[in-house]
Length: 292
Image (cartoon, rainbow, N blue to C red; front, side, top):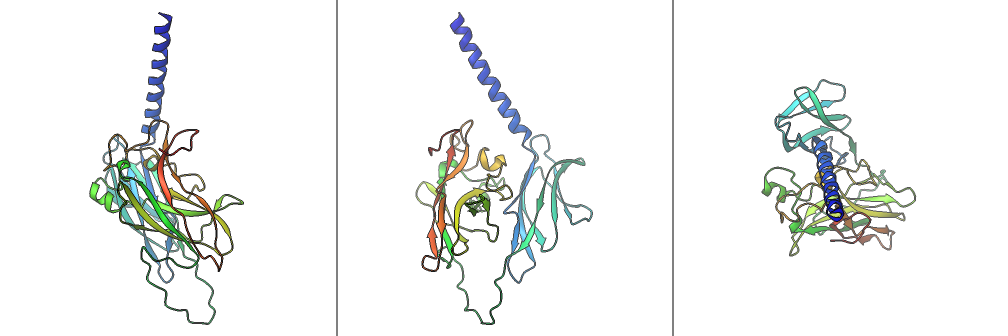
């Protein structure tokens, strides 16, 4: 009888933990997020776009998205409990996108708009730059790929599976960290390209410009870079189920989260101006670095 009671108590404790975890995740449901924030405007341009992803949760099917530009009044964008949308932003302005329901604020996100750093003028006309393609490897850059099992699915950037498949690379980015401080180098952002799949794997390729004669640690992440070197805490990227994959593998096991293998230390110089760093997404279990 004592043995039975002990088993019952263990089972009850497990069910309570699962219930608490589910409730904690449910409390995190209302969110609005901006992919690739800050928005970097290319030289010679003043406008760009930011991709918003939001979900009001089951209790807010008619949630509204609003935007406040600088200190002006808020402007209505759309009434849609869950979705994704591109919004135009301008250099020199600050943006706050809000998700609300019946004038109750559910979540918000600040979007920063910056300009790409232009090299100082030397008085010499530069050579025309080649047009970037997925195979283009500029001098002073690291290139590579991010891949993950098709059974894992893709980020649900919209409720439409085909649109999410077509845009499966927009949620990923590659960044460089200063090994001395573990802080990101924010002078540039990786360019992502959707590449041909490799058998049972989805593949995204990238190009990331790097400074010369500087050691950096190159890492892959999802979402935004505002909390680097820590991963974006949005459950959409870390723990929620994705779409289009095997239902049994579309989300990490209980207690696990999505992570990447492949981070490396890289130093570029005039004699070695290119490097390749490849990454693979896997489900990371607590206290274990073994990919699954």
